[in-house]
Amino acid sequence: MIKRAATGSLLGLALGDALGAPTEFHDVPAILAMCGPWREMELPDDGPVAWITDDTQMALAVARAGAPEAPERYADALRREFIAWNRSPDNNRAPGNTCLRACDLLEDPRRDWRDASQIHSKGCGANMRVTPLGLVPGLDDEQRAGAAQLQAALTHGHPTGLAASDLTARAVHLLAQGADPTGLVGRLRSYALENRTRYHERWLGDLWLRSQDAGPEEFIARGWDECLGVLERLEGALRDANPEVDPCLATGAGWIAEEALATGLLCFLLFVDEPALALRRAACTSGDSDSIAALAGAFAGARLGADAWPGPWVERIEHRDELLGFGKRWDAA
Image (cartoon, rainbow, N blue to C red):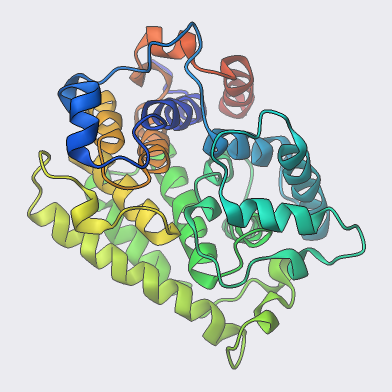
């Protein structure tokens, strides 16, 4: 059986997003009162379509920008897609203020994209949309890492947003390639340590100068250090795992990039062979439930492939045809 990792990951992202959309901004008791037992949660039954949020909208914008080859051309392509998203009448799904502010600034063609970047923001908008860069075929490690950080930097310029996006794409890529989930966190920690002082100047240019850091290595190291800290918390949570406890209590509420990564990974790793349960656990959390569930779905789908997801869910997901189109193309390559 062919796994079709790209298709599975993109569908998982969108399904997690849709499942978590109604529960975002609610605490766990309120979610349980609204949805019933978390292990039985279903997609919202308010029409034929299961609606996604800005998380999937922006992931599709990254997918539409194409393969990252030349950094400046890729930055221009991302800029066009982000501006189009910002102008769209469908951009009414509780988008993040940082994304909106940065995209407004990107509208000015005279402005360098680095001057639009919100250098002090490390919100999860940096990495909720990066999954396509873990799946695009034919990239080497430098291209994948540089592009992942670049797509984050157009809106969220904080070094932790850059590092968390790089790690998110790396995790998706490793799982799609068949990595053992039990060793995933260790591999991500090793990757973070190896890249701790590596600043991707070819992709980021002089972005670091907008910070107060002494140099580019010091700038990017701040981000990797925060990611290493949350990965340590994740390892501790996995040692004492209790799937009945809100995952946000262990690894954070997911409003910021490194916590969205860690809590999405936690939900996935609690249920590595039960992807629908991973999404349900992620959606029943006290934090940024749609982003956490979107990332958990991206990880689970990358590991298990397109057949991981219930057919009735897939049939209803918004943008189904476009998601399947990208997945089919990347899986075929």
